[in-house]
Length: 315
Image 1 (spheres, rainbow, N blue to C red):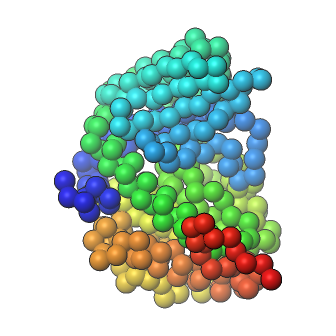
Image 2: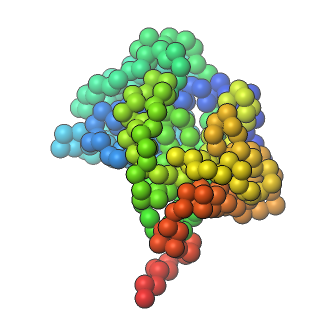
């Protein structure tokens, strides 16, 4: 495998889809465990996963006066549970049913002294089957999981750089297990009209709280049976007049009226002479479109990108 392939791996949709469908369900179990133990934070930021040096992790999850963390380790291919008192459990990532993985993970937590009860119905998936009843055999291909994680790591790295150019309210770079996407969001500071809701298997109150304020949000998504491939996306809520007709970069980016957002194929970034520059151009130009059409106070919200080891000079 060449250097470029290791850094921005190929993501063949049909080959990866069975494993990513499994991980979409399995990461929801971990996310719901975090949700069951953590006080509500604005925009559901308390529920997300984060890219780690080995996969996707919850970070510290409080439980009483102690706590634990969960990590999807895509090098050793296991869900690793670690506790504050040194306890550890490993649940193998392999072809298996969601019901079996759910039971083993919940039982492992209880055996370590951390009993947790979760809402077992998956979110944002039509016709969702509760985890304990989902006995269907699920695929897990190690190479597919590794490729997806390596792509997430590259996206996370560039998204973090993009985030440094904004001093207004901004989200962390984090992974939403409901939509199965990595995202970073900027806020204008103004409230937004109530969101209409209607997301499959997601309470409208959650959606309305998430979109309580105007946003320009960008992210990475493995795609669906219509797009047939991974894409970067960018949207504004509420969408300002003229946003959909804005000219954005690079040339492969286009507005998708079905989704209501700009999309840039992952392969267009992967195949670019400078993938980082191509992705940053997409992130910046789509944000520019949202901020200009939405009349954001850009002078107050934006700064030059951060530099390693250099604090910003404040006059």
